[in-house]
Amino acid sequence: GQQVMQIPQYQHVQEGEDFTTYCNSSTTLSNIQWYKQRPGGHPVFLIQLVKSGEVKKQKRLTFQFGEAKKNSSLHITATQTTDVGTYFCADPSRDNYGQNFVFGPGTRLSVLP
Amino acid sequence: KAGVTQTPRYLIKTRGQQVTLSCSPISGHRSVSWYQQTPGQGLQFLFEYFSETQRNKGNFPGRFSGRQFSNSRSEMNVSTLELGDSALYLCASSLVVSGTSTDTQYFGPGTRLTVL
Image 1 (cartoon, one colour):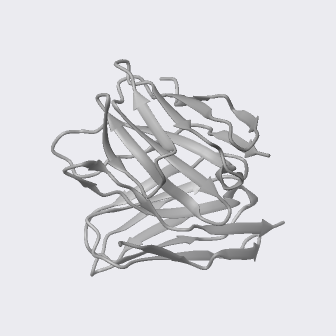
Image 2 (image 1 turned 90 degrees about the vertical axis):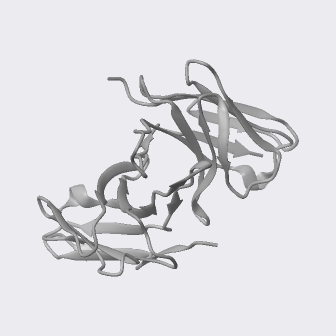
């Protein structure tokens, strides 16, 4: 079946350092979504990428969709303690039967002050 | 708009019992999806309901079932609980805009189920 993989599984950074998480799909994606889950919280939608090679920015966060639409990345510049959490990519596919979201395993980010 | 609400927030059950979890979606959202989140398996899709019909189902045993009511509220039931069912159960609602191929999931706070 379709798989979505993410690396690294964990990342510990010093506050102010950059952070990148990578997402890879075994199949070509129509779109990709990114979610953030704070410790003890629930996943919160961050962004959706649609076009091949698309790059979107949200303040210090930069999201990129690969040219082949099989991979994506999330880069955080100058991390802050508020960036702590787990970042998930997701294949938000919907077919004739309805939604069938496939989430990656997530990258857990720790930021040391 | 109020967000997705789930009740109860915490639940402790023993093996063999059954449990029912409830989810109220964002007003106007007709799709409700359920997920199981565990440290080892991550976020696993259970099923999706739309207009009171189950449209899609993940790879879970038949002990996991659900339903959706006419007001879009949804319930999830797990029968004959096993230790491995201990997890955070998340419900997510989405708008489902016709003509688009994807929807954004708005998650509730989850129900933390512990099976002893």
